[in-house]
Length: 420
Figure: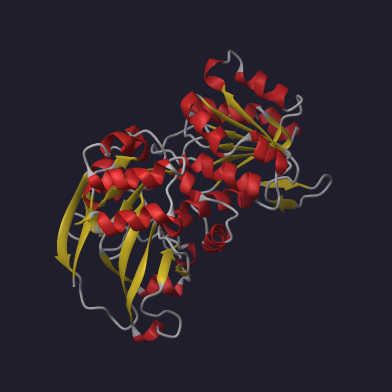
């Protein structure tokens, strides 16, 4: 079977190619990818090539398929896995497989498995690791977004606190505590706000900062302080860009007690140091945003480490349990990852979008791999729809939903866009 896929050959060397997949083996699964959400991790892999920890050293000869936030339909199942999977099943994939003892992951390491492709062959190692996850939702985009949401869930699980007078760590955010999400209105920050407000264990105070006023306004429209209050959370949005002393300001909001849990959503030295400075007693700083530089550093107050028991953690991705939890929360309507999506595109938009990802404003870029479509901002649809029937119909759906992606929008796009 032929597939079309974006493969990496080296640093900044991505190519959209058509090639023949090898015959599926008895321990493999053949699948059609439908959607893939672009991730900054793919940008880092594209920039670093084989220097990236998950990318093999021989990609110039044996290129791998990029994209790891994907979902699709199972087309054929090898004999080994027919007891667990069946033709026609929808699926999502957890790319992080630490239980295998390797950093290999779909979307980085495999020649025939990745999200930016029309058809793929999923290797035995993915199923053995329990990382091919059946999905029963109506639309495909939530399954694609279950991976980034699992990263957020994993970060909340990785935060920890201590029991006074003991050496026991209590995992997770502090119930009814004070939480700050810094640089927190990008796509992943929005997911974190959604999860913080709608999970069972919630903070009493949630302060979200950024320096982009338009993004803060959008976040407040999506997750209003009034709605959060109904959930028992005092939600405060703060633009720290124009504040002379952000640390003093944030501490005052906390009643000068500091914060139990601080999440840093941008790999910026000053933001990390700001987060450290606002930690309260036994406060946990979670460095969520992975830097591109292997020499990235920031200072930390070790006086507070010693006397106030402040501490730091970090996570890179979630695990399979986090992803299952993510899919469950989406299925029962507890969280809505569609708020992350600000752009949609086809497979032919992947290369320019991936290589330029940090410079493209907005949130998540959702790719539908079987269509041809330039990367398109949802807010541009009213103007684009004046001269294009596809965009006109899509705008009618999206603009009526506060420019939030939906099942209806996905179905319309897949039915009317030009195949790749």
